[in-house]
Image 1 (tube, rainbow, N blue to C red):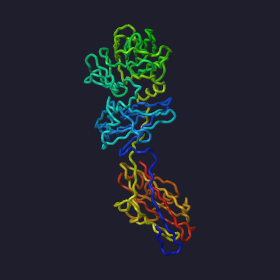
Image 2: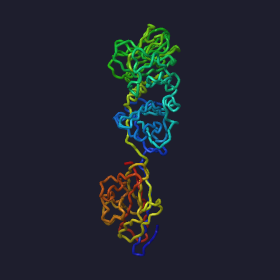
Image 3: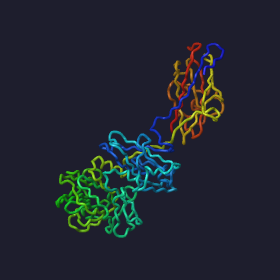
Length: 534
């Protein structure tokens, strides 16, 4: 724009507009809302690959007991209208829904347990927090490609090929089998299922074994060589009880509870008893995380994420035989007496791996499965700003500022101002910053003060006095609308701060040219409008 007015020392002002959004991870399609999930690297002792993490949604979730029930407010019982991505905001992760309990009133009673695969080599870092994003939007189609119930295709993709079986043990009296998330070895309920099933677990629901019932013998895990069994257990009754057994008396594995209150991981190797009994007793009625396994040369027992016992022996071989949960399998490698040793304890999250899990993996699993590994961020919305003409009938195309002689004042009138409009789904803040080609924008009021800009929500052009040299002087600094109303840039009821969706503020410019400007000089000013979620 080079319009000139026939007066002495005319300058031409060319103003261009640009838009800048707050720097953050890219957004997944048209999903409306998301929260950031951060895996605390303080509990990650070495990088982990393809790690399944618990995402618990409740009024008290994660390390800091955050209320994330806004997810239920948005999607209700529609549990497939969610997505989880990696830190880039767009690469989706597979999600298994263990349980989704939506309560309409009060919404804060809602709760869900999701298992998310953080896929890739060294995908969970030990040197910095690993970030994920949970998206939720009631208007989306069900995301069944990546999100599914137990044993669905999407859910099975959560668990890498190193897992032989995964049991959440959340079945009730109506379900005669404990479902294997991998769909391979559902464990049948022996004796009539009763009200002891489907009790509170460490994550969702668990199974209480009262000494009469057990699960088996469909599982044929047969994890010889390197392997790991892991499970959460809670008990207070002193007894010799079998948590699980796999194999026979020649070569077999077992996790057991002892009448002393100790927990043991025991292996039979060529009929030799190799028993690792815990140092301490755990008959305290609290949840404890137990891992027993073999590296191929070293047998180990972990309790609550820490190494308890280990010994070098054998190679972890096992005879292929019917496995059992909650009692002996007939061969009894746990006690070696071929007697029944029914369990009186509650179990949850039982997993069988055909690999020895590292100390870092076991530690991270302990923290994750008790919901103490994640931090939740604040709710984010899609952010976007558009520039419209003053009466909001069309998108901005030109902005006529005009030309003036030196030191004359130009204040844009209402017809020529630009409407800065929130094009997001929630409230935003706006910012204004400016650069010029020739003028040295002043940092204080005075003769060289040349450009003042303000966002106003009135229907008429503001008088010069409404502009503030404290808040509206444009000197290249990005100025966010965070001051209280009535201070220049923030003149009016809100003006750039907490602007509601689909509403906006009018941008006016006040010009006073520097005294050093000579006739014929032209100045190109670029005004950048920024936006961020409020």
